[in-house]
Length: 560
Image 1 (cartoon, rainbow, N blue to C red):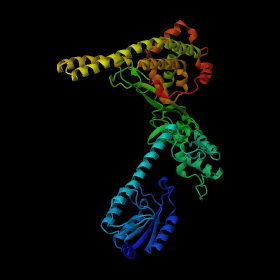
Image 2: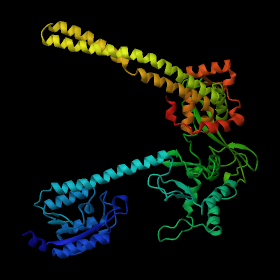
Image 3: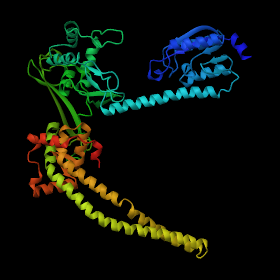
Image 4: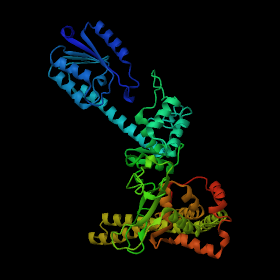
């Protein structure tokens, strides 16, 4: 009966494939149409049109799909031939429309390569398949986002590398990095060098790049490379990627790719570009913000960035944060020939507790210098660190035998209490004691059992944690100066925060009271100066320390 009914139904063949990752394993549109045409011929189905599109179905809005449903609503056809239900819909709205039209008899038959769906059928199976298709998209989205976050965490920009760099396609998925483009890296670097001269404007540089250097963009499939667009020159000159950082979800992250220029050169170019391209204050620059208090009024210390220009024409010094021209000779920054650009970071009291606080500001270079002096007071030699840790381990092994004896005694006490509780319960069940007596004795024994558990819990764990903290303390004392000099911003903040509590700034002087373990090391160094390294890191000792430090620690390591 159904076969006779199907011959009267007019059908659309619908084929779809998306270029996105969701459909990488799906047969091509041509293959789907070929297979569906064979089914139609074999089952003598009346196909009036073949519809296809290359578009994702994860959200509503496919034009060909919507036109097909509209034509079915207008009774131009009553059936659909498709390879799988997930070709029709991967979102609940489109899936719901198909389901509803089938239940209402507007669609009389949906035929896939392996199933038939009729208005009289149980709709559960169709709902399940549409639900699975939708869930696949949700899971895929979650997996992709997790992969992108992991890539950012590893220090690599998700997506297409900017001009001058290439996405490394040789490495396996999940480990792909970004490398220099051997054909274009030097040309893009030359763009920065021309801009830093101060005598070229971006349009002039663009003309040189395209007409003299014959720059061509990367080839995209069958399309050949094109000249650098006008918009790209500004995108290049304002992209922090070129000095080693990148934007992701409106946050700035440090990358592991090879920088093309220094951060200072990047900031100079932003100033030359004028107000629109000025560098915005960056969190990674203001390392000490929120970590110190004012020694006079107790308010927090905050940081600011300041750019100063020395006019190449009249030698007048002025701040570029508020103006784009010299206030004395009115020459704009863009027209100056090689202006001197100075970049400062300084810290000062917020004055939120006292507007009349008299404390001035301190420049970050001076603050770094003073903190380095503080670290030098606790700095110990590698050999001294090794001997100290060996002594702790030796002491730990001696004490381990004593702890085992104590532990055995505690375990016996715990077992005795447990046995007493069991015996007490047995006496109550045999009615050898009354209910009130049972409650009193049980309460006492449970209290005693908890005390035994408290003594047993973490005996060795506490000792091992003590050893681990001690080793971290000695490692900090040994390598903190090197870590602070070469670490990333987050590590530097942790190094600063670890040394002491409640650091203050007063009269441009950093005052830190070292925590107890570091104060103990400082006092020991006074008694035994040989514990300090033979050479100061500020001179030639950093080379030796760099070899021995091996790798910079994870900031979370310091929180112990």
